[in-house]
Length: 250
Image (cartoon, rainbow, N blue to C red; front, side, top):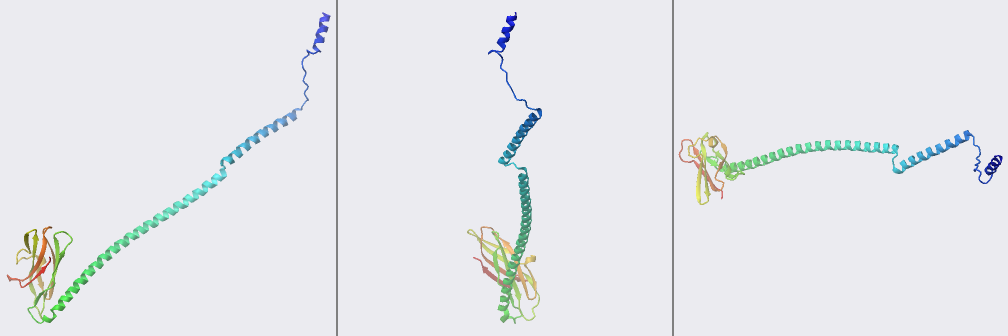
């Protein structure tokens, strides 16, 4: 047994003996510093990766906030400009409408004054033509009769003046009759306004000392063509016209 124990000791110290590793001894505070350094290095690498990754991707919060503030200011400014332009446009449109209405009124006034001026010129020319015969007490004259379309097919308007000359003319009482001759195809049409010579239509009544204007309108079939208009001046109590004038239209 002693030999067996000796042999076992020889085997443990020989080639078959287990491997022994020799490591240097490191104090615990050095190992703590090393661990802290490694931790800081990992944190720094992570922060740098995030920071530079954010810069690379363009996500700088301060720059984004500044850009948003700038764009918001531009939007507010443009909104204010749009509101101002809309107000100016509304004011301009209102002014344009006022000017258009004013222009329309002035145009109507100009046309009315032009027509009145032309009428006065006609009246003046007519009165001048009566001067040589102004000494006759029984002088009764009929101004130039005007008949023209009234803008609607078949409707016409007329205008005339009855004048009494003389030095001391008395009041003239009577009425005017308008006789229209027209052709409706091959048929001749004659219409009188008023229909009878002693009609009492207010628009045809005459009551004046020196002169009286007479204006009116008449209507015929739209397809008819007016050929002539005859004006007859009747004095009250007379069955025949005191004055007659015919105006050819076509």
